[in-house]
Image 1 (cartoon, helix red, strand yellow):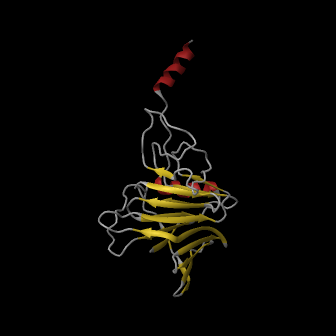
Image 2: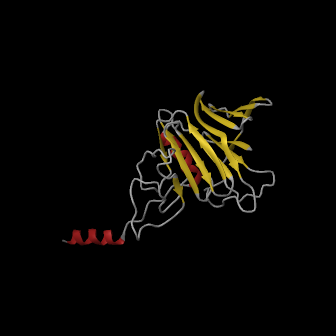
Image 3: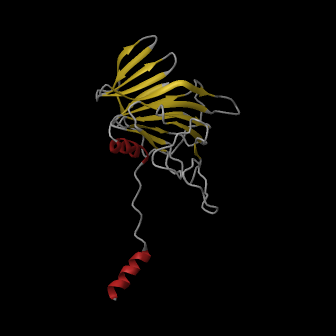
Length: 238
């Protein structure tokens, strides 16, 4: 497990086996994130405490693995290793993990689903978890207020509240995300690849979104349609 500080109130967590042969996604980040030096405040057989000097601190418990992320002494989010499973065989490199948002009032994100802004509860197994796999239902139509995937897969999730934080899973494989709105947690089931997680400390929603878009880049404004230009020109002549 490797934990790095990233400038602008962010952390990065990478977990992989010693043989380092899991697939690493390429060309997703706009640039390699600039790291921020961490200071180890405590290191023992059972735990590690480190801080970045900007009000962010993490507490790592080894038995079982758990990482608590604090901003100004407020617990924002938790990487819960109690459901951490990693397969490493010729047939499968799937892995699972859970993230909890301690200060959240609602969970938002996992864009490109025909659903409400606030993610629905799926942990009671009455509906499928949110699926992230690019599909095109444009020809046949699609239902609304469901968790089925659509045209894009964006594995970014925000715990919105008085103090907002978020995570970005730097992985392009198919994944399912089980949302628990009672615990304000998300259980990720990822098909393959590297467990590479960016933790966005916020603490506001706008800052959390900016911390994400700084990693993958901001969308460009679309070009003005030539047909709109012609229509406006014709109207001016009239």
